Length: 142
Image (cartoon, rainbow, N blue to C red; front, side):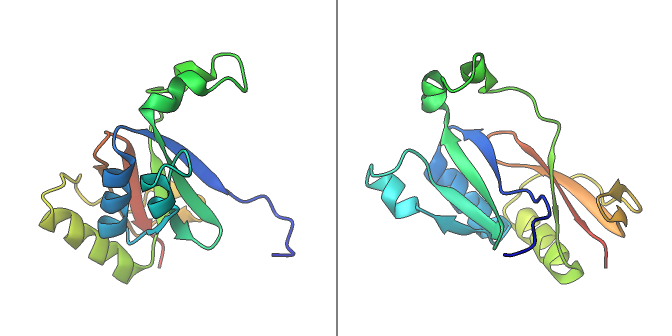
């Protein structure tokens, strides 16, 4: 990547079961697990899932909170409320995600229309929670 535009690189989510969370994101969002085998083997402190070539979600075990010493108060961020994360998908991927969540009996909100985001008004959007209660919005613009 030679473009120096600021981009979202990663988001760290506190999770109770990183392997289970990786499976959830793989089976619902279609996110690719990263370092999952290394995590299971005890070789890395957390796994991730790749949303696209530029963005990953790090799945940080809650047991790591006490080690968060890089900044005063960082350990207290475990469980800190974030309103939600939004993933923008194509229309077909949006429909497929909604179907997969419903197949797995994951509660989803009603589908909304025209909500504002980074690219302007979205055609459709909905919300769901991951196994740790993190709230996600899914939307499409096309």
